[in-house]
Image (tube, rainbow, N blue to C red; front, side):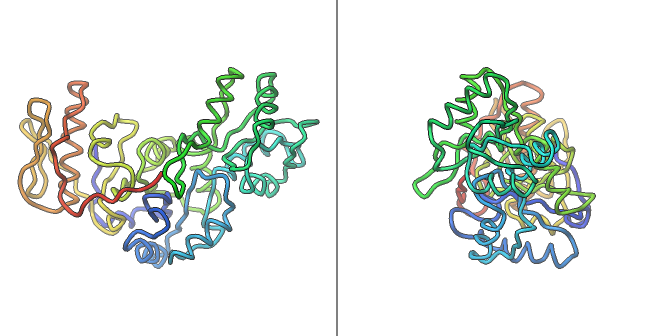
Length: 339
C-alpha cells in the first residue's frame, strides 16, 4: 500500500531519478511546470538524473533535446540503458574487448566510452550488444542471432516493446529481443528498466544515497525502483491511469502517487483503511459489487490515494480487479503520454 511522508517528499531524498516520456515531456513539449520543478529540486542541493531506456541517443543528444524544450540539462545528468549495458560488458570482458554491435549511435558511443571495441565484423567478438537502431540491417540481425544461438553472450539495452515516433507508437527493441530469443532459445541479459543495471548505473554516475524514482509507467519505472528497493513516485501525466493503477500487483505499485511532479514538494498522507472504506481528508473509497465507488470532497491527490488503495485492497482480498470503467477522476482531462 502507499506509504506516508509527513514532510515534503523531496526532503527525504538526495537523488531524484526522472523518466522522460510522460514525466518530463509528452511528444515534443515539456509538461507544464516540470522545468520549474526540476530547477527547484536542484536549488535544494539535490541531484537530478534523467533516466532513459532509449539506447539510440547519446547523453549529449538527450540533453540537447531537453535544453531545447526549456528543461535545463547537461550530458552528465543523463543515464541511458546503453551505458548500463556497456558497463555490464566491460566488467565481464575487460577493456579493449571486441563487442558485436547491433544498434545505433548511442550504443556505439557508450561501448567506446566504456573502453570496449564495438565492431560490425563478428570475427573475434566476445559478446553481442543490442539496442534500438533505426538502421539496423536484417542480415546483421541474422548473424547476431546465429552467434547467440551458438553460445556468444548477449546483452540487450532494454526489452521495451514500443517506442514513440512522430507517427505513433511503433515496435521497440523488445520486439527484436523476442525475435532473437525465439530463434536462439537464449534469453538476453537486460540492462534497462525494470532490471537493476540501469537503476544502479544512475546512482553510480549521478550520486546520492537516498534515491527516489519518478515515473509514469508501472512495468518499467515503478518495477525498476522495486528492483533496487528504492521508493518511487508515480505521476499521472503519462501512460498510467486509473485502469492500470487498479490492476497493479504489489511488485508494480508505487510508494507514492501524485497527479503531477508538484507532488515532490508536498507531504504524502497515507489513507486510513477501515472495514467499510478507505478514507483520507474528505474522501472515502470502497469497492461494492466489484465496482469502485469514491465519495466526498478534497484534493485531487488524496482522491488518487484512496482510489488506488481501495482497488489494491480489493485485488489482494479477492484476486479480482475492481471495475473502474465508470469512475471519473477529478481534475483536468487526462493528458496522454507516449512511451
